[in-house]
Length: 250
Image (cartoon, rainbow, N blue to C red; front, side, top):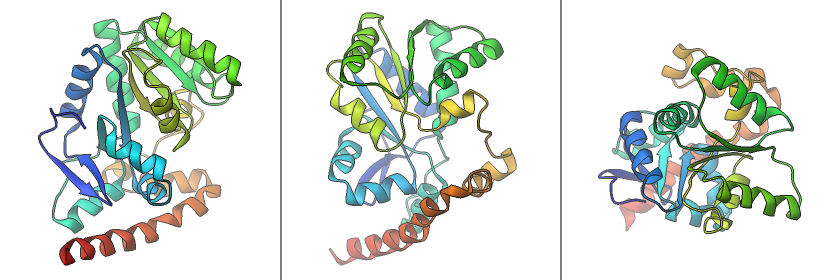
């Protein structure tokens, strides 16, 4: 995690920045203009539970430049541990803020991920509503090794500054880490299903549900198939409490 983060809290062995959205945007802007590669992760309960059983993902979260408190479960954990986070910094909201910066600062942006056509729809829909930004390139999340090398070359040769990867956790984080040095000086962030939201194929919960930490319930309503994934939440709550007790015993 970069030195500019003055405050962070540990949850299940992962340091998560205790920052507001405005502070997160400022940190991202600083990284994007630093001239080097940087990786951001937006953490929720499901991701932290995956990391408990996936050593590679855990190592990525422990060493990437910035981990942000995306999910309501992260805020809940902070309260349980006595180290509160000022607010959620969701990947969906941060993506929009970073695209605004890209417009203002003329950063070339590359969209990678989603089903065929989704990334293109996401970029076109955003630009129709909010104005254009330099588009370094677009590719869906399905490619073989030969195509992958073409994507990496395109990202680098087109001067990409902001790289948004929507391939799901942990695939997107592992892809960004694996190719970090090949991609050039990009600010890379895994954004999961945000491309589907931007493309209008999924809708976010109403603001009142977001503010009351019920976005997970809305997503479950829209996608009942997520019920298996939601079963990680009670396990996460138990894991946080056990982790808290283990820290007291040290």
